[in-house]
Length: 293
Length: 130
Image 1: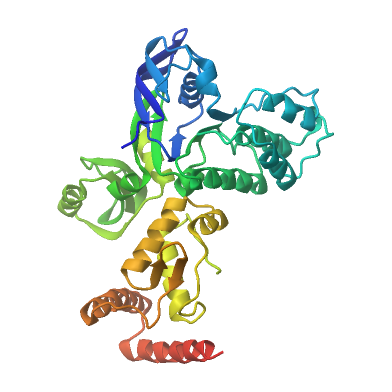
Image 2: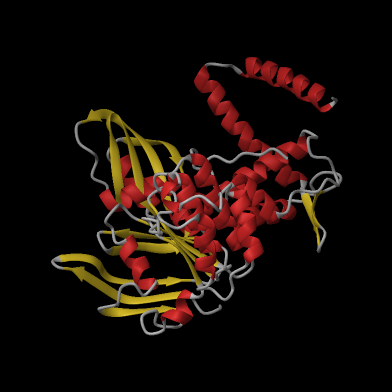
């Protein structure tokens, strides 16, 4: 195995009394798409800011390409393409000027690729950044993140608040980036269907804690959805040891579990229930089951 | 090549790609020797991870539906799949069991189901002939 791109060890971060990250240990392997999911306020952006060196690790450590991003920002940031959640860009600049300004920071900037992206995204070099639509603003942000062909592409909620056409551009950019041998994408999202489409690996944060971090296929295979029919209607959810979530009403209930299927089915049979459907839950259902129970 | 993946059902994306390419090959929409799109291109078209497409192609190759020629690409295999008779039977039997269960549930008896299968079979054959 090659060295991981990001290694986070026991990272804890507090803002006043709020614990934004609580003892998070996370490894992002080289090459592939890593999806970071969690509700708003789960700590996703705080985690990404540590990777960028915008926040210093108060407890624990953060290594990116084996380096400390706070101690050695030039070496780390030169290898990262970053799209921030709030897309903070100078509103007074024109698109073309912002491109040449940004290119100055990146020795690896590929001007012909940048021009190709600008045409593909239909961006006018003379237009002021402040007058761009929300979608065009996301596209110029994406262009600036991609044009130096970074080994690590970091996207913080890239799709949030965007229409489906711009979302396609963003997913397409993620796919093209990893299709180039050896490059890595880390993106945070609360759109679980997108994460399920493009990720190789998925990590879930909940209230600052890491709930899971595994290859996506392993996550999907480990979880099961059972639809159960009981002989009598029930007012309350059946208590099933090992189940993550049990939802329904009357005679039919849906159970989401992580492994332990045989034990759970035995409990269902003992409680006069019959499993009428066994299927694979979506990442969205798994997420809800893991964080809400 | 027109295929679609959906995240609304629980079927993994690679299996959706595998079954749709099989169907296109079986119905003649993809002919023996026809080249499939490169992994990267199909991934961009379907907006799914390139590794998922690569996995689907590997699966199709293992089942003999496609052949991968080093450096040249992936092509629909000639002469159908080299699966053993037993494997072929098993594969179809699984589908037939599902169909029987559904038919019983909907109130069709075996004769009515067989008539429907024959009818669909004629439509399928005439479409193939086009």
